Length: 138
Image (cartoon, rainbow, N blue to C red; front, side, top):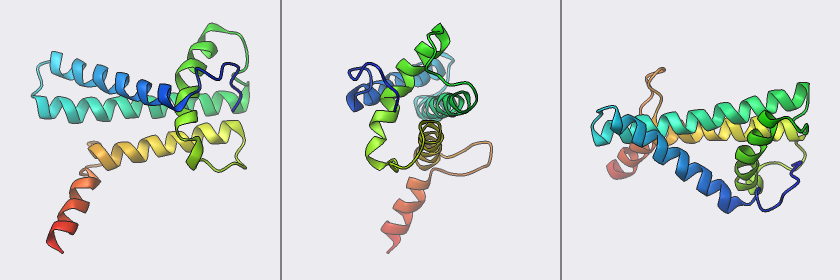
């Protein structure tokens, strides 16, 4: 990972970015008048989708033009995505190029979203509920 500031790329900051994004997503849906359960599912799904889209954008931009430039947009993108890349670094294959690592982590974020909150567009229920039913029925 091409990070110039190792403090900004710590896994703890990645957890912090995830928590803040989740709280902002749930808060937005709760402020919009949704029930607490609907706000939790919709806000969590929205937050993880937004982070996955940001990571995907970083991977595509890194492939075509590189995000190592000193443009304000790329600086903000690095400050948000570097901690997420550091958080998933232990399970990211080491042979991936930086743009591919961003795309890989974006896929993992989307899979985490489907696992925890389901996907309303495709009609998928949260997978952890299905796994709990399978384990409880056994």
